[in-house]
Amino acid sequence: MNIKHYRALEKMYLLGPINEIFPPEIEVSDRTATISMEVKPEYFHVLGALHGSVYFKLLDDSAAFAAGSINDQSPMVTVSFTTQISRPVSKGRVKAIGNVVKLDGRKVCVESVMYDEKENEIAKGKGIFLPAKIRLKDIEAYSQQ
Image (cartoon, rainbow, N blue to C red):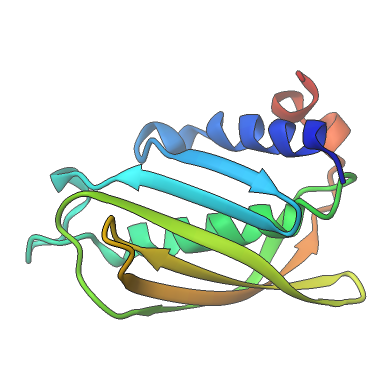
């Protein structure tokens, strides 16, 4: 792929309305994507740590954009994704790194690992992604590059 595609994916991702709630940073490169964000109390469950939905979001998003790094025609959508959370986080910065591990026809298999600011693994996930029916060139947020 190419740098222009990676930057367009990053821009498209950041323009997603959900990212106004969970403001992230993203970096896409060949077969990988890293998404990070600051931990805020607004993202906590009643026990005072990140809600599982935040772990899922970062893991799934980093995996989807790692898959998208190898497809410059269509965005990639989640078909299935499993998440394993290994430790709670209540402060600092977290990041999830998604990596393509296997191509099986149109299916892209991706694993993602999430870390706290001390590089401790706090969660991991794996998923299967397929190209969406919409074309990237038809998505305004992508084609504005």
